Length: 122
Ligand SMILES: [Mg+2]
Image 1 (cartoon, helix red, strand yellow):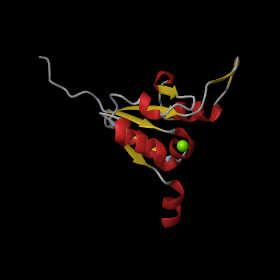
Image 2 (cartoon, rainbow, N blue to C red):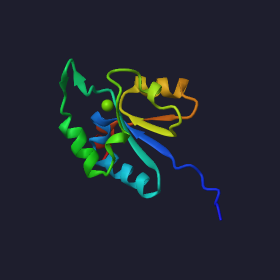
Image 3 (tube, rainbow, N blue to C red):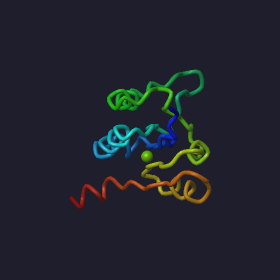
Image 4 (cartoon, rainbow, N blue to C red):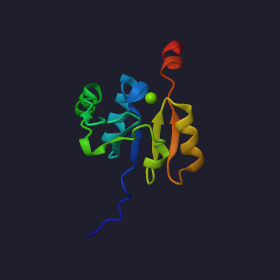
């Protein structure tokens, strides 16, 4: 019999100073273990002119966390809110991105991550 299951949550993480942090990596794994779909949304570019940028650190982390390549999005400096329609949460260390998301996204809640403050407090 068809069950009325809710859509899995779509959770997005920035990479630099967010998902490169072990604390956020543990959180991403928790979300995945709860059945959420985890994505990376980075301002980085995949290409500079005709040259493909390797982004080795990003792909290595994604592989370690079992985030498939199709769930990695490069915004190439474009505001992330444009890439987050239909998402539930996005974590980022850039206040401007979070502000845009919380002002303009109909679905997504932005959450500011402040790695340095957290480290200092521990
Ligand atoms: Mg960042």
